[in-house]
Image (cartoon, rainbow, N blue to C red; front, top):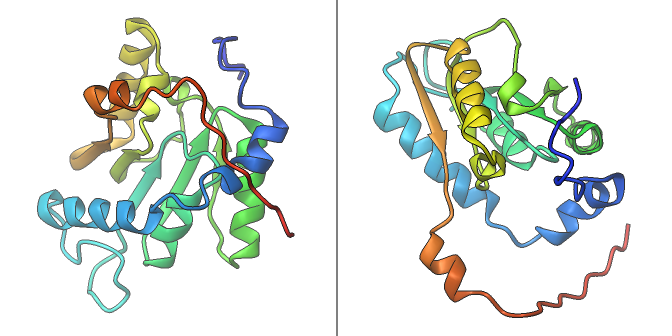
Length: 184
């Protein structure tokens, strides 16, 4: 499958390699805490999740537009049964490297959100880090929601986070510079 939006060319091999460095200080653990709170509050399932000691099967999660898999890794470490997808083969390659490095077996697939087709239903479908905002027309939004629904059962929940537009507008510096050191 090929991503039709040629404007999204930022997601190149170099971007995938440096992505984790750029977002090294992003509070992925706190975001996963929040996802777990939502799961515990709204998912109607015995055993509700992945805290190993709870009874029931682990909660299954589809991580749409998972990027390099940082949310997926943390949720897997917390005991969830997780699958990740992203339209960028380079991001998925990095997610696989991150998964192997963490000694975790997570299936990652190259596919855009609006073309996700895994022939499986999940308890939770999540799209973190404002991934919904990458869909730039109503047709893609409709396709994404239709495909997502195919991966949900009657009690599944959908978790999408969105950036606060007012806050983004307030934080519009003309230029931002961060200096990173990759010591690997």
